[in-house]
Image 1 (tube, rainbow, N blue to C red):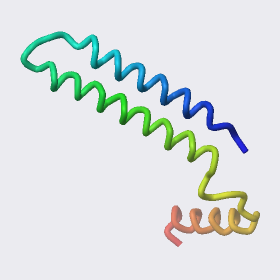
Image 2: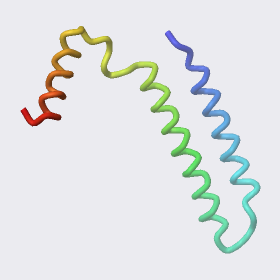
Image 3: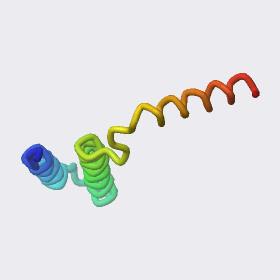
Length: 83
């Protein structure tokens, strides 16, 4: 079973970057908006990376028999040539 350490390592990096965004955001009238936008963008990037990483570890479609590939290939050829 693959390790979960890369996911936890990515989470730590995302949390550190979020903390930096919260601490080092310049003062101003839009400080809360900028801070929230940065933190939301970092969270969305982390979640997208995590979902992609797990999808590669556990694909929905496993090894299919050769007959399935042949049928798909024939169906795609028929569709391309309008048969």
